[in-house]
Image (tube, rainbow, N blue to C red; front, top):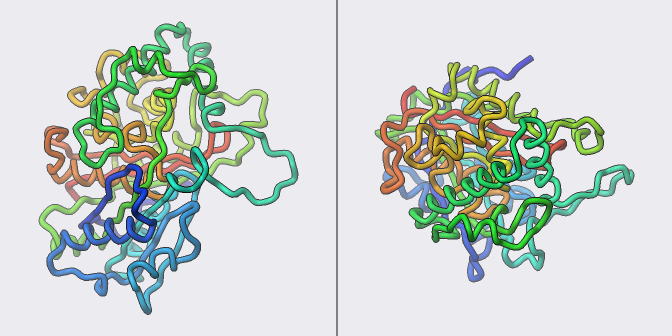
Length: 394
């Protein structure tokens, strides 16, 4: 049974997002307070007391709902902490959306936060529970580096063409981030800089990988019929799906590294709920999980933006540039923002929210009507995936 659209439509009426960068002088508490204050402060007649329930997504920056309740001084409110790999921020929003759609609450808040820069660990940190010893040992760059050679072999793309497409992803996303004051890396990079960066794993160099940063984001959600009580420019959640894979792919000899099956399923369900039949032409912009440059190549096909085996060519032709037919990662993506795990999914939502309200300034997509936010976690063969379709019309 596929997921269905909720009985009550849901709208996002306010959002806040901190800059994503090295916040050496700010704690996770500080970042949450900043994001929530921006979010609530954009609604003149709303205070935290008006919010009925809260969700906070974090992988390693707090335990229990007190991660949010403590810095916000919340008393007598239900606060839930969630975690779902790198899709943790999206999971906070998904659960908050279900709660308001059910009729249990009138107004809810989803938040996400992560402090990585002062964790004494270089990269994404996680504490895994004891296992039976059969788990595949891996690193994120190593796992995602397998996408490029698999794609080349499957579609007859030579090494120079694949390298050019991966480079174009990095150059594009850094160019977009250079126009975004909230991005960690605000400098455009050349193709030469990308291709000469030190190797990390396989074909991946440093500039093929997303960075490490701190950040937080927040959203207020209400039922769609109530949205105009709070704002003249609500953004509606038109479709949403989450899929957790079985985790068997990394241990399977025949696993296909040219696709994320979880993303394909989640996108199909979200599109069906939103009435999207041709995402390549109906979607105005997309925020996708560009943790590594070949990931974005594969995602263009899994999301139905490019035909199978053609994404590399579409990327080189500029289809996904800021002024292309379907702009992707207009805010700079993970490449420019880094990846504070609990906040990334909501950061993607923040860009979609901003674009659909026509408030993106120099990076504004003309006549933006429908946006996709796609967030994944884990590694190829063992993924969790979230896809949402948002619109400025109900």
